[in-house]
Each structure stands twice: as C-alpha cells, then as structure tokens.
Amino acid sequence: MHDVSQTIVAPAAAAAGGARAIVRISGPRTVAILQEIASISVPADRRPAVISAVIRLTLGRTNLAEVLPVEIWLWPTARSYTRQPLAEIHLPGSPPLVELVIERLLAAGARLAQPGEFTLRAYLAGRLDLLQAEAVLGLIDARDESGFQAALAQLAGGFSTPLETLRGELLDLLADLEAGLDFVDEDLDFVSNAEVQRRLGAAEMQVAELLQRLASRDANQSLPRVVLLGSPNAGKSQLFNALVGETAAIVSSIAGTTRDYLRGPCDCDGLAVELIDTAGIEMLDHVEISPAGLAQQKTDGQRAQADLQLWCVDLSAKQLQYSDHVAGISSIPRIDVGTKSDLATACHTTTNHLRTSALSGEGLTQLRREIASKLRQQPGEIMASSAARCRGSLAATLAALREARRRAQLAEHDEWLAADLRAALAELGQVTGAVQTNDLLDRIFSRFCIGK
Ligand SMILES: Nc1nc2c(ncn2[C@@H]2O[C@H](COP(=O)(O)OP(=O)(O)OP(=O)(O)O)[C@@H](O)[C@H]2O)c(=O)[nH]1
Ligand SMILES: [Mg+2]
Image (cartoon, rainbow, N blue to C red; front, side, top):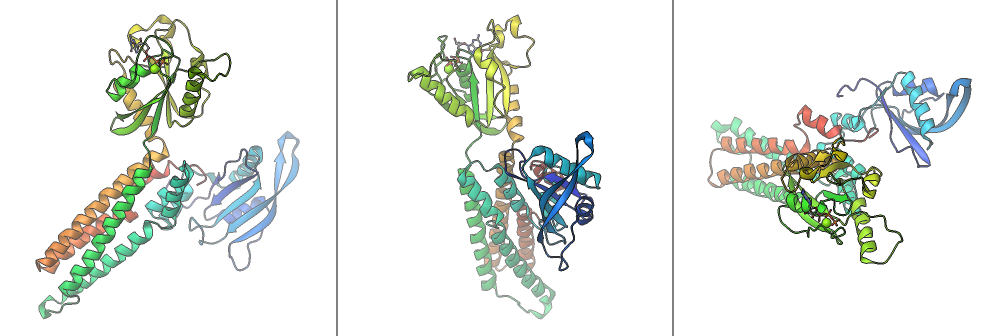
C-alpha cells in the first residue's frame, strides 16, 4: 500500500443521493490516463485548473457511444494534496455513471485505491502529519458539531503548528548547547544558563498546555454507546446487570418491565463503553400516548443513536418474536445475542447467535470481547487510541524537559542536558509523526473511506 508509483482511483464522494459525484485519481500517470478517456490539455502554466471536458462512455451491449459532460479539477504537478499529479472528475451523482467512469480509468491503466490511500500518500509526502491525517478521519466520522469543529481545528494545524514551533525551538536550543560542547575547552558559552532555564521553562509550559487541550478534547468524546434491544422478557435487563456488575435494572418475568432506558458503564476487554438497557420492542396496535407507547419511542431513540446494537433473542422462547424479525433492518453494527442459554430449547439451537446466560455466566466474556472488537473496527476508537498515544508521548516530553531544567538549575554538565533534550525531541517526534512505524500507519490509514 505504500507504493506510490501507481496511479490510483476511487469515488471520493458518496455517489448515491448527491447531485454530484466525484471520482478522484492520483499518481504519476494521472494526466496521461485522463487524456485517454477525455480530450483535455494541461494549461501551459501547469497551474491547477478546472477544465470542462467530455468523457466517451460505451453504454450496455449496444456499443452506443455516449458523451458525458464533466468538470475535471486538475492539479497537473506535485502541488496537490498527495504531492503527485491529482484530479477530481465531477460528474452527475449517478452510481452507474460513476462505475462506468471508474471502469474506463481502470482500463486506461489506473488501479483502485485502498481505503485511506490518498491520505496515506499525502502523509508519506510530508503533506500531513499524523495528527492531521487523523483529523481527516475525524471529519469523515464526526458525529456532531463539536467533533467536527475539533477535527477541523486539528486539520488546520490546531495541534500541529504549536508542536512544530515547539520542536523548532527545542532544536535551536539543542544546537546552541551542542555548539557550546564543541568549544568546551575554550569555555565559550553560546547560551547562558539563565537563558537555557528560561527557554526550557517556556517549552514546558507549551507542552503542559497541549496536554490540557488534548484532555479537554477527550472529554468531548463520549463513550461508545452499546444498546441492548429485543423483545419484552428477552432477558435484556438481566444481561445489563450481569455486564455492568450491579443490579441496577429491575428484572422480572412480567413482560414490559423496563420502560425508561437505563445507562451503565461497562468494561469490555479494556474498552470502556456505555451500556444501555431499553424497553422491549413491541408491535403496538395503535400509536398511543401511554407508558408503553412512550417507552417504544425511547427505545427507538436509543436504537438510532447506538454505536453498536446487541439484539437479544430469548433462546428459551418457543417461537421467534416480532423484534427478532426487525433486527436486521438497521445499518448500525450489531451483535446477535442469544439469551438464557441455560434454558435453550431446540427451536433456537441452529441460529448463529452468541449464546449467553446471565444466570450461569456462559458467553459473557466472549460477548465483552466481541463488543470491543466490533467497536475497535470503528474509526472513533482509532481517534481515541491515537489521542492516548499522543498524550503518552507528550507526558514523556514534559518529563524529559523537567529533568533538563533541573540539571540546568543545578548547573550540571551541558552534555547531560543535551541528552535530555534529545529524549524530549524524540518523544515529540512521535506526536508529530516524524517517527512512525509501518504497522501503525497501516492500522490508521486502512480505517479511512476509500477515496479519502
Ligand atoms: N434462566 C434464565 N433466566 C433468565 C436469564 N436472563 C433473564 N432471565 C429471566 O427472564 C425474565 C425476563 O428478564 P428481564 O431481564 O427482565 O427481561 P427484559 O428483556 O429486560 O424484559 P423487558 O424489560 O420487559 O423488556 C426474568 O424472569 C429473568 O429472571 C438467564 O440467563 N437465564
Ligand atoms: Mg428489562
């Protein structure tokens, strides 16, 4: 995936629904490939330009050639997002048309992009640091306004610029110290001890402030919401209590016990989530303003806001219930959970549900693991985990800077001080993406949507 010599293509905007679709192409052969499918010429000054063009498409088996008017936004040189020639073909938002255009580009020598590959190229070209790349991911994933603003600020260098400035200042200080070390016999000081202490103190303050900002950003991010759903009496509340570890929810054999939803913290394989117990889903005869009707509305609300749905099917039930038939409708990730496995009847033994029993504890560990793994496949978690990594590196930077300043106060040898500074810079490098391992890169970039 790190091979940047091929020219890649992918739909960049959701083709369905939108009035306009965008197909993005990037790589050394971008212009040549475009010229094969449309008659375009690159502006003489080789500046980015918007070009009106027509693409010839062959429709169906009739070999009927159709012309499709498009706009091509062309960055013919390395002055682009990916630092390679890049183009966006803007066309009417019709999925079949998008497919036809991509087919033509593939036939002309492009290959389909992997998820995140455009952004990976931008990152590899030094166009983005890791924090900014994550911000792109955050924009794709931003659920609410505040998340969107945070991602946007990050992309605009909200974190990167101060980090870069700080790195520059520390490098300057290190250079001054090392220059002094070279002339140690002449007892020549390039920078006074008071000056060193002042500059280290200033750097400390900046790192502490960044740590603070990272923490407040974290606080904005709520825990992933895992919602228990299913028929009345399916055993949701019992399971809720077992997973949360207290008897917070009322459990009873009377169907329709839970009315209001209940929330509780739950640890799933090291991942903190918010577990939500809801009223069982019923098919009511008429929309009524009754506790039962209102309970259904609340369940609907929780279901829609879930990051992950746990659809509970009572394995002891004699037949499938209404809610078991509607379980597959939502596009939100879900886990099918079989409850009361200790009472399981033959009717359900063939289903693919994760068998659990809140009573015997069967399957609960596996369920926690499954919840964590499903959530970890979602982008928000990557944001959180890399924020945690950044926090760790920033804290280590701060510690190294404090140690350096302590040495300066004690007027210890500059050699030690320089070593601390180098350690601080290495930690800072982890944050800005100057030092990154390949598997980490793959992990982050494979979470992007294709075309980003
Ligand atoms: N044997 C056995 N019984 C269970 C288990 N889980 C729940 N039950 C019983 O099933 C009945 C319903 O459990 P609840 O947890 O209240 O069911 P619910 O899905 O919350 O029901 P509503 O709130 O009405 O939607 C109770 O009598 C529980 O004791 C289990 O794992 N094994
Ligand atoms: Mg209940």
